[in-house]
Image (cartoon, rainbow, N blue to C red; front, top):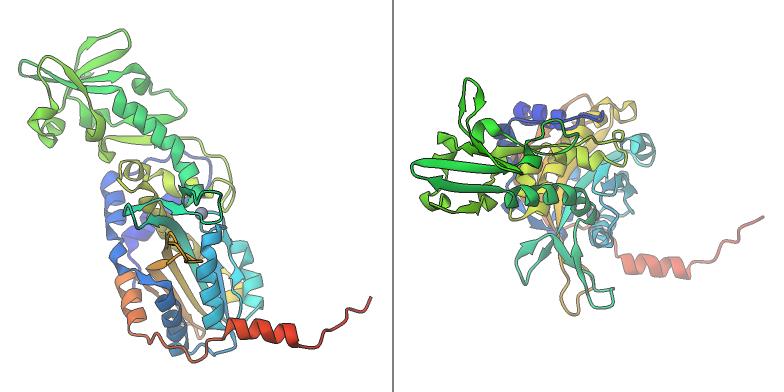
Length: 400
Ligand SMILES: [Zn+2]
């Protein structure tokens, strides 16, 4: 199968690794986000046996497989890990860093620890089944079963951008004077020499003539411009009140601005997640579900980046490998439940057959292939029994 080149090309751009100012064309970002079909989700208790059976159908041998996971550090990722251990018969290798970033410097160790190799990457997002919203998870081990931001790392990264966006929504105004549609913009948003912040696409927002943006008047802290025909046409008539001005608010859509921020840090370093998210950030902060969109974007970026590191790793050459990238949706446990009802949304997969053949599977293909697999797994282990066995076995004294 041929990878979606447009998607891969774009994701490579957002994975640029130097501190950089990143701007991207809006239509490409929108198409990438739109390609992700969240309805392809399946319960983890079905996903893992299907994945195991898929591996076996590809010639992976029971007892010779080393699964690994690149998950966030949160405790709610434990249930998927337990299921992986149960179905693959071994605890999975830890291939991940906070936020669901793949640690490619662990490829060699992973390759050493098993013959046939599986890597499961997942960004995660909480889901509150009572409010039917994404982005929080109820933590039953806290004093009051507090609901907190999930993924917390993603939430911390996007907070600065959300604040910048809130300022812009509250400090740009729309109004009408006679036949003229006006956009009043706070001067702070017009300073092009800022090192970082939200920068407007003025060419889309306001009219231009040969001298540049058409200025109607200057105020003490803002400029008043004539709105562009394109922008006027995109809004309902009542967005432009006569004789008074109203905040642009939700009409400040993702195609009207971009972010600039100097991000320090190396690949797979402290700011890697932010590098993955900055270009699509206008779509993240304007979404009603910002943490879900951020998880999608991160999974897409990590699949493309990690896939390239796997192909290049000499330790993986000539080996059977299945690499799959997903979103883990952590559904908060209800009264009496110990674990989240995690669902997996597969995004893409890369398969190497060990004899030189390889292929990349887009979302429809990998989901279709998984759904063809049985959810029964006769090789699965009884974890309780395995633990009991270990307790009963004669102790081995460590000789010093
Ligand atoms: Zn997390």
